[in-house]
Image 1 (cartoon, rainbow, N blue to C red):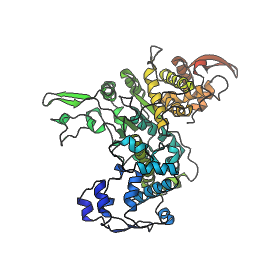
Image 2 (cartoon, rainbow, N blue to C red; image 1 turned 45 degrees about the horizontal axis):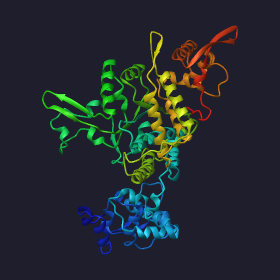
Image 3 (cartoon, helix red, strand yellow; image 1 turned 180 degrees about the vertical axis):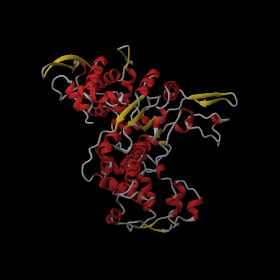
Length: 522
């Protein structure tokens, strides 16, 4: 139990340094038997306000020496306590400082008096060795834990979610970036989104959402008073994570159109105002946030109505899983809490340090140097999406311009680069865009579009092949082939068959999958 002083008194860094030498906190023993003799006031600090080396200095002056074995015993699959987290960050900073060159040591000594208000100076000084290299997923166990707890399917979904969230760091975006995880009920969408829990400075989590949630009709809400419960001002510089976004896509055509007309204004960064007869005008200007959510497959009506007000969402489909004998064991072992808690631990550590390094939202200036192939592939993917999700009116496709979807995919690739420690694009960053592009279209079109674009396909797509691939009847397979030809992605051709010829569809040359990018598996 933490002492009463730690509960009731706050300290800044100087207070802690003055007090830690003379204040001895309670003896703590972790679940793995690691004794801790720590000052209570040190444990009361907000760790996120200090670099690892600053914590090391505070920690070292107040603790006895612990062996590597003792430190390692404290590590495991359980969530870290505050004591364990402090000790781990100390050991990492100590190890890095021991391995530094004499020049680095000299530089660190010269910058020992850190001006903590100068965030960039502190991040770039050699006094914080763990922060001189940009945090990258390759240096954390996010991939391993998510794959272990949510299988490969969960990891393929997590990557675009992390990339979307990371776009908040970019300083040249004013509107929202949003992505929806779409999949059948029970696949694990909600549990995966729960792994973002605990990062309240970066995420605002809700069970469900409607446009009315952003600004209420009550009095004096936009004044920022203590009674303000409006959602919109809470979202500035954060990502809204909604576990059940299905409520945004249901209802009549008029309801969906009105709802997404409002959502479009909010997501464009223009803020939102409501006018009521009782309380007058209430609302907010210039709120930038991102949006991730989960939903079951949308109806064709929802796709059509969203298209009428301008598409602003990307989608990633949860891949279909194959259930082999013994699958239940992997689901029930460890209970429901273990996947969430393990996921939260690694996701929180990575995203916290990514934000800490860069300085928070709107802090990263982008390097515009990139291979020409990157732009070519993103332009191709944008064109695929605009053709594949076009509405059909009187037998003619009604397509949107590719500029918006191209920008969204380009920013998704930039977010992918950021979570891999780069501020410039590489060709590997667009692979995540390929999966998202082939998900950002009505669900009934996805399989036939993917089958048509698959670079391993030899020859036209025939009704018999479509029947097997799509698991539909032969008449439905013919309708799907006709539909993809009407969209303009392919052209009908006569294909020899048993007892005569049949009508198939061949991909147009402009839509052949680029050889530079791996075709995603679904």
